[in-house]
Image (cartoon, rainbow, N blue to C red; front, top):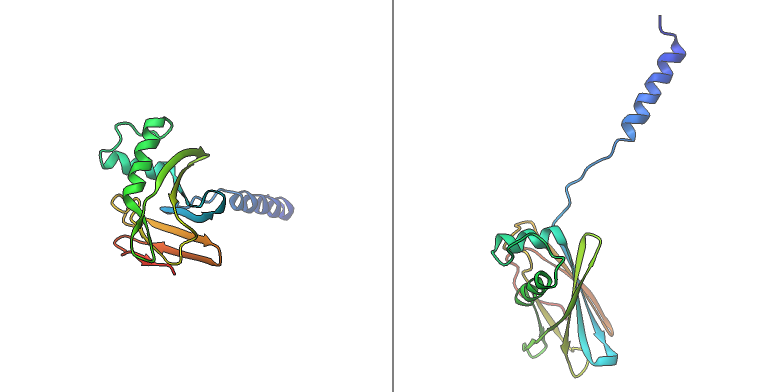
Length: 167
């Protein structure tokens, strides 16, 4: 016969083991972009942060990459050029601000792509186009944070969103 103490102890141990089991969640398709004014060089700095798995699957599906890796320089350059096509900044005069690729860096499971654009000063108005990874993922969200002197804004882009005026 099982004593009350053994039964209670066993039940508590089972509950503790059940509570300690890992919870697996579905990772969302999200990218993060930061835009800032680089006063020392009179440039606008753009940093894209994308989960490598999402980027590589999208580029392979679109036929831009032959193998599913972003660890080599060629693959990173392909990603950077893709991002240049899918992301644009427009000044107050509605002229596109040309962005040049500085490079890319892998940190953990994310890849960071760095771009800059020449400007006479911090923009007086800014509009953004952002279609990154939208062709590959219907649920993709792209968060863009603008941190310029006197202006801090965050906008989120979903599939088929138009150009958004930030300020």
